Length: 321
Image 1 (cartoon, rainbow, N blue to C red):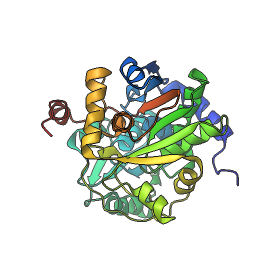
Image 2 (image 1 turned 135 degrees about the vertical axis):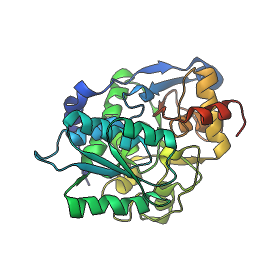
Image 3 (image 1 turned 180 degrees about the vertical axis):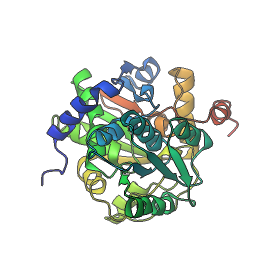
Image 4 (image 1 turned 90 degrees about the vertical axis):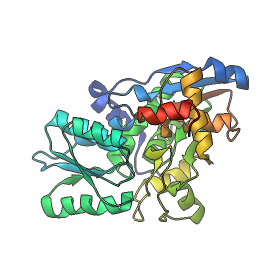
């Protein structure tokens, strides 16, 4: 069966958002290439304007809003909220981001600095979503979900187009896996053009909702727990419309990392690659270092975001946590 989001949708998204995003930069990793004896490339999406890949999907959604929209709202672990706040400000649209108490303060501050309102509700994304749904039902806001939305998935899929254009002979891509919007878009963009590319999803062991749902055969609720990969937290929604099936059908394998393996990825990024990335952004590096993924002859590791609390980052690189 054909996917709900097509390659043409992703290509149209790329044209739509081109003037608003930073093009993807891909560079070799000498340290990892030497270690594995294969070409390991890093995709530096943390250089995006709002510090993470989420701007692609948020901007693609905002640019397709109906005229006269009251405002937009979303549930977020931080990076989607920041991206939506930025896109909404550019479009002159009011924005309210609903989040749980688990979202780090630095991510709250980043959203508020862009002029959006934040509302903190409960201890999970599911609890925060109740308020977002109320805003839609009672105040006429438009929901822009962080992952399970056709416009968001197509926007994130533009990364896959840029990867394949820059590295036509790539054979393996390591991608963050949370709600599935990022990996679904990238997998579609790649596999609809080059079906033999391996797409591997990386998540944390603490509350990996998509991976546990795949094991169950349908979307399930999981307990949301504190993790260094906080941007990968949250459920996938029991009424998931797109990403569960896309991840199931287009992603080749998934792996989970311990907290120490995530921390090792952050340290690798800092000491060897000389970049600062957050826990969720570093999971591809962590998976390679832990031996949980066998790289291909030409592997791209996506570094998806940099929005980490800098005191936490200092503690991690000094091995204090």
